[in-house]
Image (cartoon, rainbow, N blue to C red; front, side):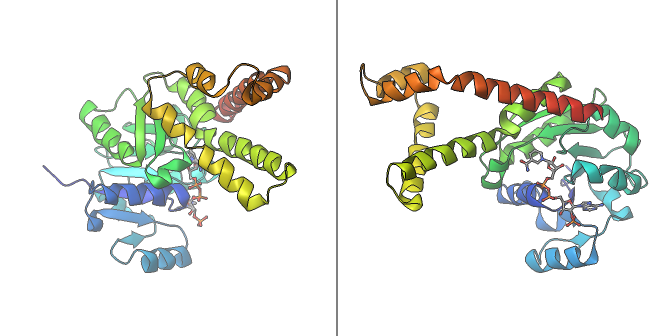
Length: 269
Ligand SMILES: NC(=O)c1ccc[n+]([C@@H]2O[C@H](COP(=O)([O-])OP(=O)(O)OC[C@H]3O[C@@H](n4cnc5c(N)ncnc54)[C@H](OP(=O)(O)O)[C@@H]3O)[C@@H](O)[C@H]2O)c1
């Protein structure tokens, strides 16, 4: 079988996180992972940081890579598309992780059929991400599984037949890390108002996210785990009563639906 070759177009946070994950799991050999950047200065920086990986500007050599990962900002896509469509060959798979650009637009602007679209999240940087992905109807199944294997290097992945659900993935897990950080910030602030320094409050709150591991490793539901902490007439119950009175759950749900709505708007712009 021919060795997999991957070109990464857009070597920022996400593009490099994916590159690191592919190498970590030996999914691609170093000489077969091409980093593509647009400015000379960026190419030089990448070459210094990754001396054993090929680095280049977008050129015809990209045609030799079976998978082309597009990880530029959505607003840079049209410029990238103009260059990429000139070099793409029919057997190549384009995997986009850009938010808000539907498969139909990717296919149209790239004049290319074999296209997949994925929504990762930033814990991909640690191999602890979750990615929802969809594929164009023209995608060969074997190629789809090849790309699924690549996505799993950054954490876990879930295939969605219905591409429109990617807007919900964006709202739930794509933006999700920011919701956690928002909550962490509020909890740290509460700790400070109770008399702790920022660093002690930060330590108390961050270590409390050990609760995530309990949730992940136990068969109990969130309600059962809450019940295990909240005894009748106790402190947790006092906090939960306040949360319910303030409509905290409803506010979170409304915020996430606003994110979904924005994702739908962006996709139709
Ligand atoms: N961050 C997240 O949580 C998240 C989650 C899901 C999806 N995404 C998607 O992931 C994509 C990348 O996000 P990011 O946070 O990694 O952005 P980023 O750090 O800004 O990286 C984007 C990179 O693309 C490069 N680039 C722009 N135009 C280019 C071109 N014509 N040719 C080659 N390289 C080019 C930029 O290079 P310069 O230095 O030259 O500008 C930059 O290094 C976005 O589309 C975003 O929607 C992000």
